[in-house]
Image (cartoon, rainbow, N blue to C red):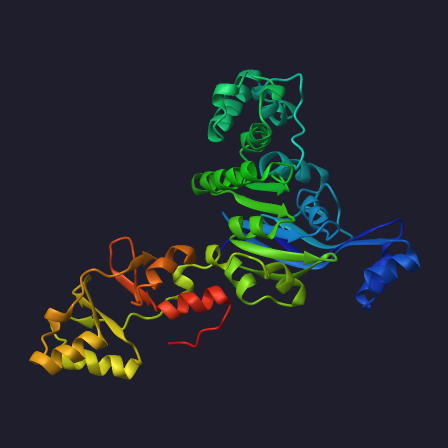
Length: 396
C-alpha cells in the first residue's frame, strides 16, 4: 500500500528552549515532571504512523491529549520539535517555504470544528474562499465551488447566506470549502463535535457516502470513540501526547492494549462493531453429488458440529442437521437429499452482529455468502453470543 501521510518519531514541545525538555523526555521523565522543571509543555511525544492512500485514519483522544497539535503538524501549521512528517514523501517539517505552500495549495485541505464562515459572503463565496486566495479567476472558482456544494447536497443554496442555514448545513459548507480545493489529503479536526447528536450522526453517514466516491486520504480528529469506530479504517488512541494503540475498530474493542483503552471500550455497543467476517469459520461444506447421509454424519462427528452445509457445485443446496440425519437413517435408511433444509439463515461478510442476533436464535449455523451467493464461511450461533458478551471463542 502506498502511504500518503507518514509520521516518523514526531515530538512537539512548547516553550522557548525545547531541547532540554526533549532530552528529559527521552530519559523517561513524565510530562508533569518536565513542566515542573522546565516550564515547557509536551504536546506530542515519539509518535509514528502511516496512512494509506484512500484511508480514513481517526485519531481519538480526550482534550489535551495532543491530537489537534498532531494534525496541525501535517500541514505545517505547527512545526515539530523533532521527527519527520511526510506527505507524499516530502517532509513538511524541513522542506522549503515554497514547497510547503505548494503542498498546502495542491495536496492538503483542512476542515475545522468551528465553521468559520464569513457571514457577509454567500455559501458559494465561502466555499470558493480558498480558491480566491490562490488567485483563481472568479468564474472558475465559482464553478469549482458549485461542484463541491453539489457533492454535499447544497448546490441549491449557493447564493444563500450562512445565517439562512442550519448548523449541519453550515458544516457541510465548511466541508465543501475543503473539497473545492480538490485536495488529496483532507484534515478534519473535530468537524462534527459542535453539532446536535442526530445531525452529527447524519454527517458521519454523509462523509462515509462521500468517501465511497471521493476516496480521499482523510485524517479525522475526535474525542468520541463511537465516532472513531464508525468512521475509521484505522484508529489511533492518543493519551498524553502519544499513541497507546493503533488498530481497526474490531481490534481496539476486542483486544484493548491497556486499561486506558479498555475503559473507553467497556460501554461500546459491540453488536455494531463486529461483523459476520469476525466470527465466521470455514464452512466445511459437503458436495451433494458425492456425499451420503452416513458421510455427513461422520463429518459432523469429526468436526463436533450439529449441522453442515451441502453445496451443489458453486451453489448452496441447503444444510443438514445431525438430529434429522440420524433420525432419517434410523427410520428409513436415510437419503441425504430428503434431509436437506433449503430454508436456512444467511448473511454477508459485512453484516453486523445486531443483524445476526435474530438469525442466530434459530440455532442453525448462518451461511456467510459473497455477492454471487457462494458460500464463504459459516457463523456458529454460539460465536455470535460469545462475541457480544466479549468472550474469546476457540478456533474451530
